[in-house]
Image 1 (tube, rainbow, N blue to C red):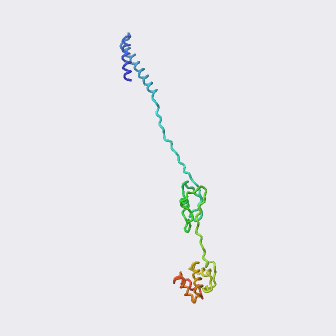
Image 2: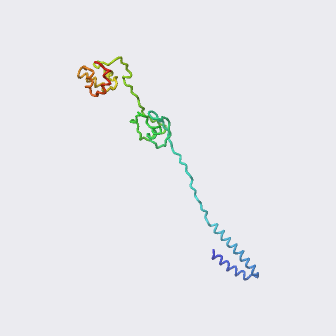
Length: 201
């Protein structure tokens, strides 16, 4: 651009030298021409420049995918819960407050990925009433005539020890005294102390 202006000045000076104007007029014409030249060159360069586009990042909104499951049974807070789509059964049980005391998850696959709309059931504690709560006795049980169910109804005696007492009597004959119960496997001093006032011969 500087070279172009220099060439313009040289040609303009030659042209003005041939004009019959005063020195002031010639300088005025030279200045006007120089201004026009600079403006024209600026317009040309501006026309060739490319606009710069600035791409602004567009904020993305991530919406988590959820599944809805029903958690029931032996949990502390059974109900319907919404969980992330990749959650597992253990996550659903945890959301429901965890397993209630006595709840059984042995049949539940805790690592399985849950599905939308399913029910997750935890087996609750089922209290088993001992037979001696259901049977009302009028007096001590005769251990030589009692059945397995009768023995099972005694305090501290379950179905296993009841079967042992019955088997012992069948093998060894009638008991001679209530103290003979201590010969049965599983009946020690403490357990016999519970039984001695509940049985007779």
